[in-house]
Image (cartoon, rainbow, N blue to C red):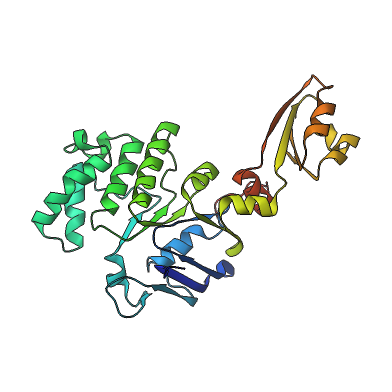
Length: 313
């Protein structure tokens, strides 16, 4: 196994009487994308803030094993040395509205002590990477949401970081903008970058992440490769049933044909290892609509964390 770039060991963080992070451990290897998923209030953003030295854990350690150092660097003690090799995209838009796209990159590069000539050489490639060459002189307020997120990603790359920490980087984007962002992130992984990614989009997690960390109430409840987690926790086939009278089927005899039945609103989810007997009976109920599909990450997420909506705390 390669030496990890980041190791978090038994992190705890309490706010008042609430534990935001509890006994949380994980690591990130070079060239991998670790996805952190969980409901609102699960502790995802607190975890990233701790990794950045912005939140001090009450207990536990965060160590970076970066090339060029003969010892592990620890947060927050070695924050300046660590941040020099990190790239960050936060949930909120932190672009400077008074600067153009090119100027946002140039000014940010100076924070890392880069020479003006070096920054000037990097800016055209970063704008091209973000598909913003034609918007070099435009200000953030003139850009679409997708363009601003790509500019934030380009800015996070100005110091050529080894590890990127991305906190829900595609929230609020339309499908086309999300797909373009995914393509850029996949390109970075192919270049050997490592990524710590929090996301609410299960399709995003499945596309980008080599491993997933599922957390709830600040604790790790599952960890592993996406397809392996699905195989471990779920039946392989799902039949969704909705329409007039669908909810009543939960207590009907045909429910025994599934290993597990869940309900969300007026839709029933039948989880099974062989959907054929169930589909045969449902075929005699033309008033119902059905969808037969393989189990996916959304099913995993809902099984492990529940279907009840949680408000931001």
